[in-house]
Length: 234
Image (cartoon, rainbow, N blue to C red; front, side):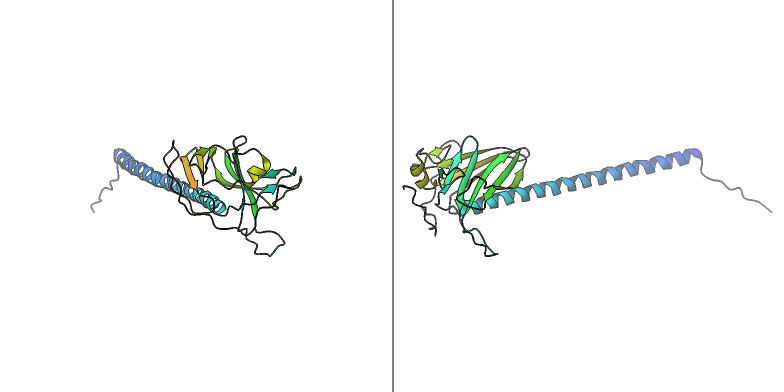
């Protein structure tokens, strides 16, 4: 009876096979890791874009509803329907169309303000128009990673102003109508400069070229508001 010799793999053959499988595994892992990183970056960019769109829509909706209603602050001083300060940088105005699905005993007007604080774009809102000393605003974060914000206002002479209103007297400032346009520029860490241009009470305008006065806004007048400004001359 002839017995056949059983022959296995040599050590060298095993080393070669393991090396080949190792190379394939490294290549497969590298490709999978690249796909996963790309997916994470795409999802992060989509979330960031959605955050910017929500902030833009909130700004647009508020500025489309600007109402010519001055208020009194917590110290009893008259504040114009819209005011823009340089220091501290702030955009504050009265807006209409405040929904009231619960039929609460309140007005349809709302006082809101925008500012940048701790690298966040904040929207503040008050429950009442004419405030008391204990009236507190409710802050909502609209956009993160915002380094700073710049504001400009287009007056009736098609000139850009860094603040609004231009008059210093309380009564005159309170009765001054809103500007023809409001330009809001946000400087973000990842997206760079974001510039929005709105016409208070109407749809957003096209962004003019930086530097000069830009293209003049359309001649449409904002829709009439139901609540007239109070008599502040007494």
